[in-house]
Length: 344
Image 1: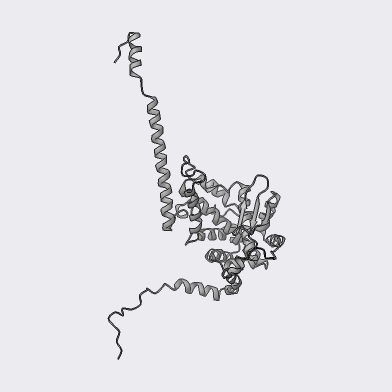
Image 2 (image 1 turned 60 degrees about the horizontal axis):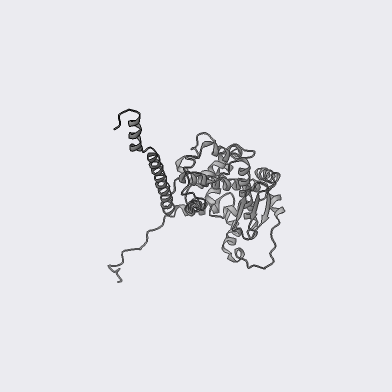
């Protein structure tokens, strides 16, 4: 009879926790809508040939007018788009833009979109940039680099979470009128947990769409897990790059105040979702905690460098002030002798 050898001590790796996977698969298969039907968006993400098409090929881009017409079917999307067009904003396709980008300008701001993206993603990207444009016109799209490191991370996260949340809200409104392509693409994305948080509140109580509860649930969910990791890395690298003298700049705004977040949470045709009572303040440190070890280490280095340079500048100013107060004792003694007053 075969016997196990002394070296056979069992599996070399621990059994993974499968509870989370079971919950996700159950939601996908038994939910009110079959999320596995969104396979098209998943297949597109795995098809590299569609992302990296060779230059020179004739490609039929989705008409921008078609994208705009779809967004106008959403109440929130219509308000954002009409306001942006009234401000003179221009929307263009740019194959060199990785996804989408908003360029604020004094004359006419510009939004660029990568035309090689599927229609559902184009809808979501355009809404995110329209939200940034709306924030720009409202005075809420401040540069996070105007703040100290911790608050720069917080403001950057908040702006990213807000833009994504609004795209979720518009996608849900489009889904309600039969335009589900934007929502389908989101559900098949790595941000599905944020979308699900919005969906749960919207299905339980339709009033949460306008009172800010569904929006706040999606906003808070954005700060959980690894959703903020890439955004933290980007803003921290901008600080380290120091192309605008961030590391050597004088002391900046110490705190991102409540007024900034009041502007950030304002929505057209809805309540301010960042001003809901009995919720954590959007300036709470739980929204700014950096869990990723690499990002946390770089952030610590930035804060140390700024503190060191600030102390060095302070010591330099004090030494200059002290040197200006040095008395010429020889001249002072001569003047005192001439005036008949005793010297030293």
